[in-house]
Length: 304
Image 1 (cartoon, rainbow, N blue to C red):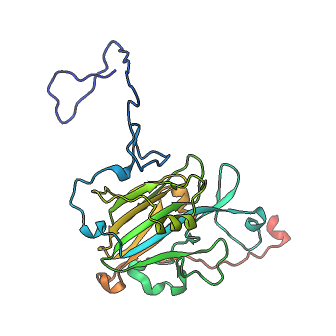
Image 2: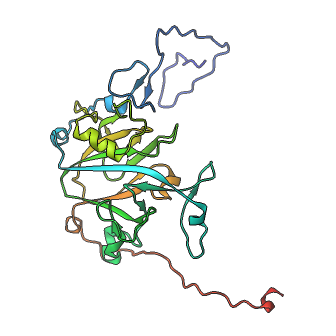
Image 3: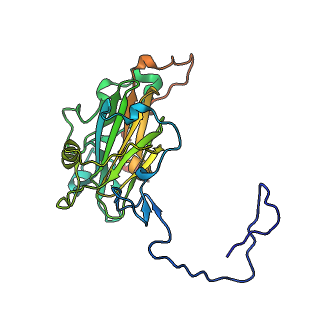
């Protein structure tokens, strides 16, 4: 047990360890502590054992547009894994990226049925170097996109719009909660939970849309807290809003690095290129490094 000496505490203090240990007997009628953002996502009532992020109160003034009944833009983003069959992975002249899960499965990530690939150049400074067909979204998928649709997932948002994002966990892996991070903004968390329909064992986009239509997605507008990263509960949803007042190309991604590498990302493109400052003269340029590949000439002599 650590104690603090009676001496005055300065900027740096040491906690000396007492010579004798002390046993503490905790007399708790219910829970002795509260978990922040519990994985079970029971957030529609007060609890003694946990507090959901959506139940916290913001200490700062909130943009009143965030609190309006209807946002200017509403975006549903379901995310899940896609499992490759072995015959899909090991085909000649194919170079599919994938993660080998602890179960041995070969998987990629999908957000709104798209696995994100990074563009060949930075869109902020070199948008003209990126073919328009490189970009896609749930409403504009490439014609040749299959189940493993890979492109630069970009959602366009009007400058200064109030945006609501609804993340829906279709992964539903037990004990796995995905933390999503948005660059360029802090957002207000207005809802976290799971389906109120006890007959629904697994949530999906269709069910989330139906709940929203019937007003059953739990939202609260009493001083919603500000975050830039939020964990989506397993088999649940998160709702957040932000004012799109910072133009640019902002990456939105799962914060597990290995999920980023297999496509659990997208770009929120706020405003138009005209809303951005001009690129400085002689600003460094970059792009894909694609060296020429020529097959070596093999002969028996090369093995001696």
